[in-house]
Structure formats: C-alpha cells, structure tokens
Amino acid sequence: QVQLVESGGGLVRAGGSLRLSCAASERTFSSRYMGWFRQAPGKEREFVAGISWSGGTTSYASSAKGRFTISRDNAKNTVYLQMNSLKLEDTAVYYCAARPALGGSYEYWGQGTQVTVSS
Image 1 (cartoon, one colour):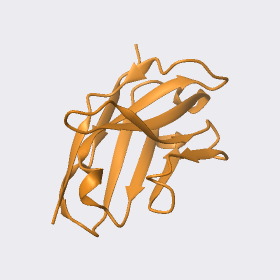
Image 2 (tube, one colour):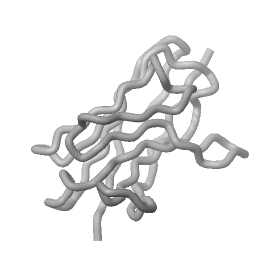
Image 3 (cartoon, one colour):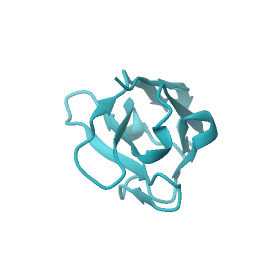
C-alpha cells in the first residue's frame, strides 16, 4: 500500500505563491507517474499537473500553465507543485496521486491539503 502525504497548503493572498509537497512511502516511487489534482467546493476534482517518472515529461491543465510548476526528487520520494501568481479561483483542496509509469488509472491518492487564496 502506497501512502501519499501532502503538505504546504495554507492561506495566501492573490498574487502570492505556495509550494506543495507530496511525500510517498514506497521505494518504487521513482517508477510512478505522479499527478496533482484539485477539488473546489461544489466542483468536480480536476487535473492540475503531471510528471513522468524521470521528470523529463510534464503536463499541465490550461489553468495552471505558466503559473504552476511540477517537479520531483526521486531520492526523497517527493513530488512538488510550485504555484505562483495565485488567483481566487485556485482555492481548492489539492491532492497528489500516483499511477503506473506506462499508463492506467491513478491508484493511490493522498488525503489532500487545503489552499485558500484571499483577495
């Protein structure tokens, strides 16, 4: 069983920055594709960003492109989401998730960390 633990959420003013971290419990972390998702109140969970096992390939939702950066440190079993120029609409619970490197569904999810952007 893979455990994912997010941290780094909080309250920030619009235009500010936050860096989320997601620490994985397993030694095979480096073989997994990792993603960040978010869910705002009353809305469905949506994809934010993803990163390949090597870190060489990244993918972003249009809402995140140019403002958010996903990265990973396989030596630390950790994936990060740097969020800059935050907007009110970025307020959500952010989740990290893991799936097999070659594709398929996200099998493991963290408990989420709240990000609140204020005006």
